[in-house]
Length: 370
Image (cartoon, rainbow, N blue to C red):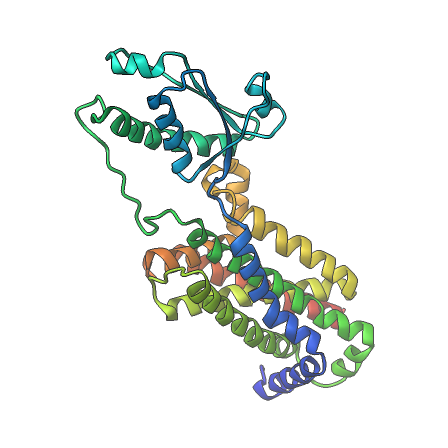
């Protein structure tokens, strides 16, 4: 029978240990804020400051205006070509990522009503950067037609694109909730992975097992203080996201809190399972970094969309809590999604948390009573 008083005693013992170890408390509260603030500034999926060489063989007013349109877009910066060298040499050497070729008589042909063309060469060695650059060209082309010729595009119709939930396509609105998932998951696993292993290494586990405390009570007592600490870290991350980066919050705070609790329990249970299986702090830390960081970074949808992954990995991510919390966090933050829209992620998070906690308790009991 689960005894809440014994679990509370374990939790109070763990709190006393945390208070005697200020490094753990500083790590739990300070690290999430530092990482989110740092990576929130550094990580930007928008491709800017693209080096471009202008090979202007016309030097006419229309050619100069075309160059100005590229440079004033905010995406490109001009790189001077080496005198006497082929402009493509700047791309070969890595100094530039694109070359704008403007042929002779470009301005004269334009004044005479003749069809004109300019060539834009892009470095394709980085396919993601090249794809982003190509995505900028249609808008620049429309601006060039309007500003240089004063005419509307040739077609008699125009497609207007509207971006829902992130109208400015601000990448920080997309990355900050994802960073929160990665930081919370890694920190939760790391904190609890060391707790039981520390008891075994210090020899205090034998004293604990000499009492009539059940494995589930030990697990609950171990998880509770760290859950409170990580929730405090979540609050700080939320404040940094809202006040520091201006990320909007369109959903329910209560629903977001519930998602955080489910994810934290899943991550803490995973850390406890690692701690129970390894019984060594160094090994537990290594397993925590591998199983906590890599899935959150590569398989959660933070960087690569799950839909674009190979079939095996699309199914494999279904057993990973970060994938579902990533979907829930972004949906609540940006879309204002409710429980009906997020029923699958919540069900998956709850199932994963229950299974991990049950396995950790079972393995702990097997170790105690072989």
